[in-house]
Amino acid sequence: MSLKFFTKKIYLLFEILKEVKPFKISICELEGVDNYGYYLFLNIDDGKNNIRELHYKFHKGILYPYQSEWTKDGSFVPHITVGRFENKADMTTALNETIDFKDIYSTIVDILYC
Figure 1 (tube, rainbow, N blue to C red):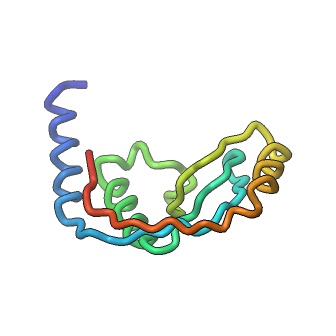
Figure 2 (figure 1 turned 90 degrees about the vertical axis):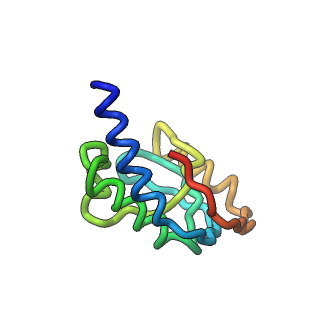
């Protein structure tokens, strides 16, 4: 792939990012997810619609070939992956060990890097 190809992709990403206004995000809970593997997610509460909108703007155009199959139906859930496990038992153990996690972290997203 040429430098021109990557330059065009980066330009298109910046075109999307320049329209983004600052928004608040809050991380609210841990969740075990066993679709397409075994994961521990920190779910996003406030700001999830902003993140979902960005995700689909990126993947509807230049990043479409790189979109995960499981999000093409509109089911993307904004999150931070904090664990990936070999099996459901390990995922369940990790979830049980973090069951008392009740912290809520909030911040303002005002800078996005490409």
